[in-house]
Length: 262
Ligand code: KIV
Image 1 (tube, rainbow, N blue to C red):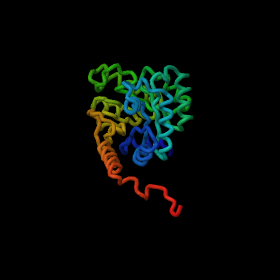
Image 2 (cartoon, rainbow, N blue to C red):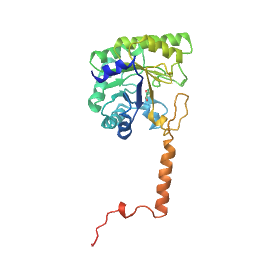
Image 3 (cartoon, rainbow, N blue to C red):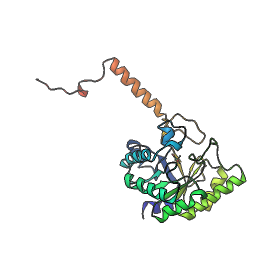
Image 4 (cartoon, helix red, strand yellow):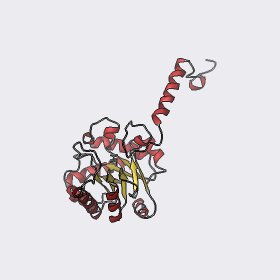
């Protein structure tokens, strides 16, 4: 059974664990505990301070993914296709192939439903594994970053998008900031795993940006649970390093290179 078949089997058995990573050392820690590691275009805001993910380039995604790949042995590696890299079939296929050949990732993720369904079908027909993404779509958002599924028309659209994505052959769907009861309906209605971020416990799996959950990225949003305060750990280490230098406690002989009897 391959990694994707194993993932699909989990839908009715056990929850799916996913996280983002942007570099090798973090990815190698996550790999043992995750089913999917995503190189998300959230790296634009988390690492580069961009106002939106729209400024993230294909080359940035490729370089970070190459690094992440070095840390992964078992998880499914998914890479986000950035804004304006999948505007038509040929552009999408060319860029997806470039991402896969340069990074050796397992799949790519595209944001959207009906609007891009023919592009997704084209990728799948060309043997590209695709992860879908509905609900809040940062690449298309014009300032309204609140949760989705408040009004019936919007709920129907998101549900319909999820069903279309399933029928187009994606292997799973990220539900971002989707209202709880809608996330349940979608998860019940599709036969592929739904992966939630701010979309309740009803989803088949969960994803968070790892920098958020370890407290490295200083954001406070409702859907993030912080599991440690890594900033505090780093601050303490750096403070002690500075103290050691000032007190001449570092470096010691054991940290230095010395030829005796020279
Ligand atoms: O870019 C990203 O990190 C994502 C996740 C939040 C799902 O798309």
